[in-house]
Length: 335
Picture: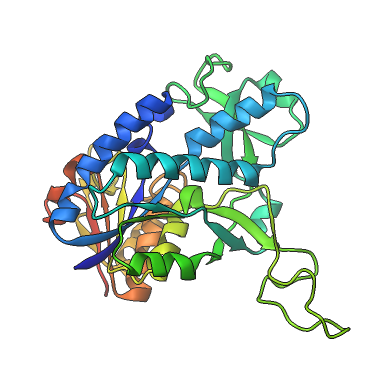
């Protein structure tokens, strides 16, 4: 048996970022069927997933609603639960038992430099005029086709604006021990780490630990308490933490491309079939893997293989069996 963490890209849940709940259920069933080669080959699965389109829809709804908007960390938690529920329902027992979905928090450093330099686009698209009137920071983004927010093209072209929020590094899975126990009981797949997890920091005056004695001999009132922050954690890096937490042999990223490519989009494009962490980091230093697309996956794969001795794989759902055989995908192997 092989313990495998499968990181489901957004396209595995909601194709093109648009669609109803019924559309999501249908897409998830397709993903379930695509995962069959893993089950057939004896892989015990733990699953992570994205939630970008779902958060986008919730942010748009919050803008249209009266009263104070829900905080971003609450929306991340809500959509984690939403997607986890849909995945568990549509997967059924097909992946080795009844799935369990865990709303997952990740501790981040309140002094992470990302908080001083927000760069992660989230939520709906705006025209320049709409963006200028928003009470939050926005940035210009390229909009190739369509949107994931259910709106018409407010920007009227390929350039639009979106809200930007910090994307700090995940440092700890607060539910790691519980996720590990669930993964070890062979009762079925665990679904966790959705959308990178809910980013939290120790509550004011606390260290987020198990607590200790206060000056008057009692337990500090904020022992073990955490506050959510308005940020989005990179789901690929959180997937690596999940893989380490459950002692996985393999970390698998399912994406909408069939592999990582060198010179992607040029006449010299070629599949990177297999590489070591050092080799992929050399390619990354040559700007082969953009930060907004393949970069975080490559970094997560290299770190996982380098630190655990496991293997990481990037593949497309419809070519998973070929990737497992080495005929598709990108495999990152230990040195």
